[in-house]
Amino acid sequence: MGTKGKEIVRISVNKLLKLLNKAYADEWLAYYQYWVSAKIVKGKMRKAVADELVEHASDELKHAGMLADRIIQLGGVPLTDFTKLNNNANCKYANPTKPDTAKILRQAIDGERCAIDVYNELLKVLKDKDEITYHTVLEILEDEVEHEEDFQTLLDDVKSLTKGKA
Ligand code: FE
Ligand code: FE
Ligand code: MG
Image (tube, rainbow, N blue to C red; front, top):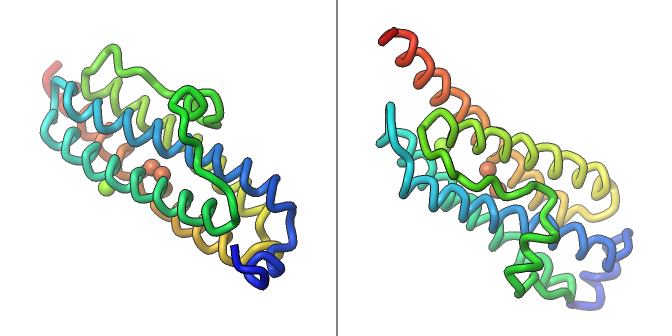
């Protein structure tokens, strides 16, 4: 990266690159989980749930892109090996083996909560150390908070439909 651009980062760039690559791995797993869940989801409010998953999948892919750009700017390389994406992630991939809308939404909510924790911790590491990465991570965290709320609201709707039927 540019000499001056690197100079203003007051944290170990190697340590930072490891943290950013772990978050990058999380984003790919979340992207794939939502993408494939949208394809196979069944049951109550299927269309609404699938549409929200598609929308969020595209946000996660955007986050992966933002992290990759900053990793490259810092002189690193985004993980290129799929096995490493899986092994380095902070948040585990939740395999949608039981693809009814409530279960899919619960898995997605767990994922968003994990992401919120990861980015919130990352902000603490970056605070007063690296304003550029801080700004990027804050922008991602804002999306994850919105994602959690969107999925929770949908799950409440699905649950109230279930109650109404009983
Ligand atoms: Fe994300
Ligand atoms: Fe998200
Ligand atoms: Mg949304």
